[in-house]
Length: 179
Image 1 (cartoon, rainbow, N blue to C red):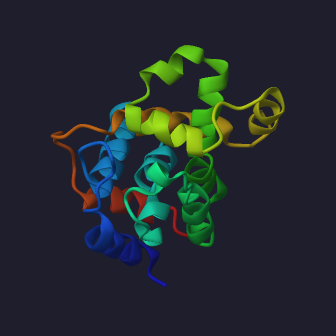
Image 2: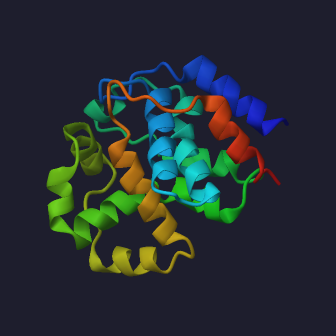
Image 3: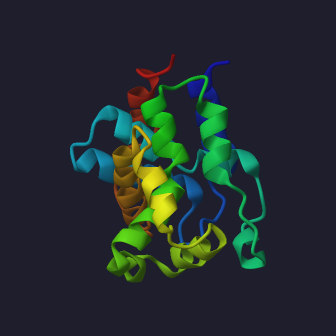
């Protein structure tokens, strides 16, 4: 499979779906990659930031699932789908970004109040702040610090209007990692 072409097609077909933050899912993902790039992150972090919500694009679930208390586990879906095509560092950035939010809420209580309302709402469905055992397990993940970076860029990528490079720019960065 041409994974880069498939990613591009998913952005075109499903990137318009509302994100719950007054922007589309595709726009949010591009903004997340943009912020990673602006902070001079590695190309692997930029790629993970771009693809962190890829599971949402391929799940095609209703936009209001969290309002019904449903967790689509988009992080797991995206990570599992992309795992054959990208290295573990990128896959963990994708697959652990929700756990990173739970971790941050547990270890930095002020972090929760800085989350958008939509992100606070999804946190409850995603398990809430981690307990001590979950924190210890999360910190054992090889790339948990990368996931924390992706999470922080994820939190930033929610602006209605933000000038940033187009999808093709970020796909060129991602293409260098395809295995």
